[in-house]
Length: 58
Image 1: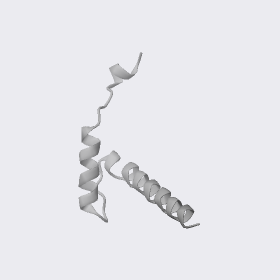
Image 2: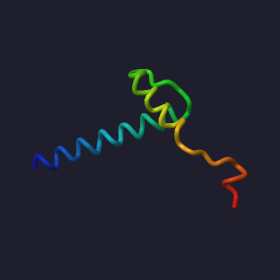
Image 3: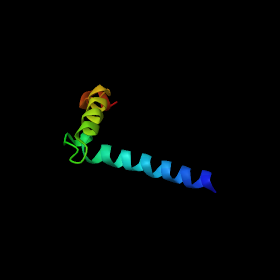
Image 4: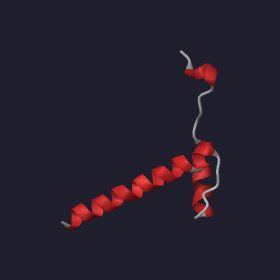
């Protein structure tokens, strides 16, 4: 029973992180509650490769 509760809590934590990533740093906005976390996420966004329009059309 404890394992199920811990896995559900971990799932909620991951879902919250994804929601925060999509809502703020992915759009170029600052994370209002935890600026340090927003800065770390922004570095992750900047390091990912991006396809340009000409590259995405095959």
